[in-house]
Length: 172
Image (cartoon, rainbow, N blue to C red; front, side, top):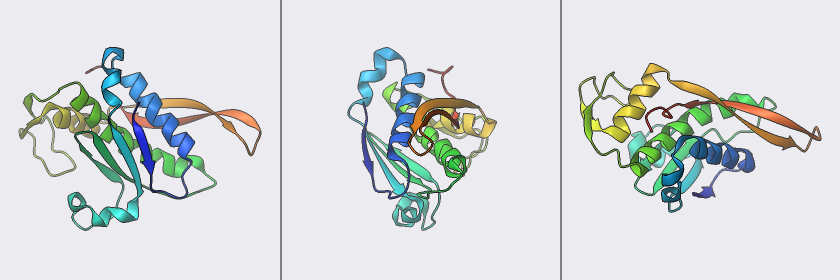
């Protein structure tokens, strides 16, 4: 399984590891799962995105996926409403995980983008499939609600936590 490095201070690391692990397990084919073991996922507070050249001096939620590594910039805040930050963080995290899955599945074919995307690419631009498919699905709003069960140590009971994530399951 992937290796996690948290540079965050406030998020529930067990919760995020659980969502990321469950997302990978539910998305990638079982016979390719072993290929994720050499990947490193680094989670940073979104304020540090200004130091990443891919963010062009701005801070925000998002990430960068390279071969063997994902750098994620997320809201590192505690809030009484668990879903406030988890919801937007998981959209960005699942987006980058989909890029990783595309790389693991060798989606290196060059294909045209169906839609203008958020990173400035225009429809018709030819990209690697692991970029094109993820960006098109994001623009098209192809998401699903993923759930995990966790124990709430404050309320002393099990609870189900939901988050919206990008859906590429039918493409893999």
